[in-house]
Length: 175
Image (cartoon, rainbow, N blue to C red):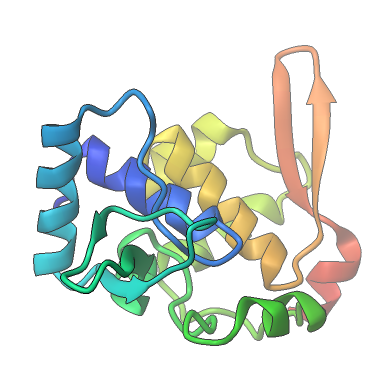
């Protein structure tokens, strides 16, 4: 599936949002945002849902109800994130439950590739991960966030040439 940079930014931000809601960046003008969001809806990567006034919304329904967009399992999968993470559960329930380490991801998936790179002694830089997965920086960082939410302890190692990331030894034992 080919997505534009704008669509990737929108999906990545939604994947990182506490309630998995789309929050269009302020720099995105009205028409560009509308076109990108309509395309994501048509592709079933996001879905409409009623939201409160405090939550991000993209339109108002016929009855005056604010309508927001939530990333779907297909949207998470398009980012290379595990779509089995519950997106339909109440966010309060998600916060109350401690993240659980996952079993080894399917062989050959991008998540498996990232974990193998992060398991190396020297870890991997964002550029290493971007090159391996073919993603932009924000999508790669969103994938790291997704791994953390699944219980993987990812440590940041500051070096002279920048930062690298590595799966903490305790998390590797779970795998």
